[in-house]
Image (cartoon, rainbow, N blue to C red; front, side):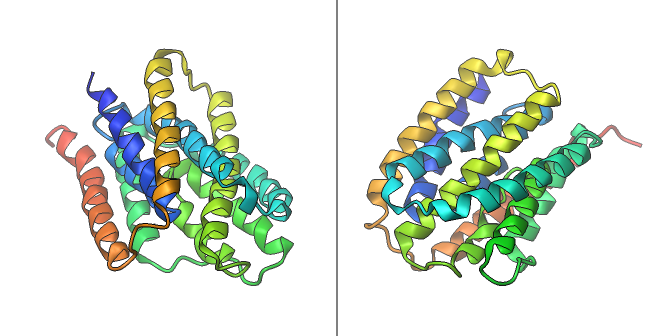
Length: 242
């Protein structure tokens, strides 16, 4: 029953993302190892984050910029195909360590982002965002700097980040279904996580204008780093002695 701890975690991480526009997905996937088997982490995360991001976009629908959608979706289809091919070859015993290492890179390194602010930039964003997401799970912060070139208004950034991440998670969820991941044994947990994520988005949307941003990024990075190091250590601690 320990996996049902993910219900309050889903609520709180979705609330965080609703309030500041990012961070919830990274924090959620960093807390999932040990609560569900390694092979279920990224598929369950994709479906839960689909609900979280879609509901956040729906609650702020007036700020959606529909011009972003076609190019990001086109790039995402290509990224999903490539990422699925890589995921199918992974050793799932070491998947938490791989996710932890990628989270550290995403959190602390200035990863390359497409230059410019045209449609081709959005195609590239969709491609590498979704492709990397097939392996790392949480890649939302990667696209924030790209979208900020188009509009720096807070609600616009939060809502349209949710839009492109909804496309990302929808494509990934479809890919995991084609790869053979079965939802049947997880339907109760998934239903609860989806409901908790939607509720968290609703609360976070209403908290958005009330929360100060001072020093948040530093403390968030520190917490995520500790959780990522835990993920890297888990397979090492469970490995049989030589």
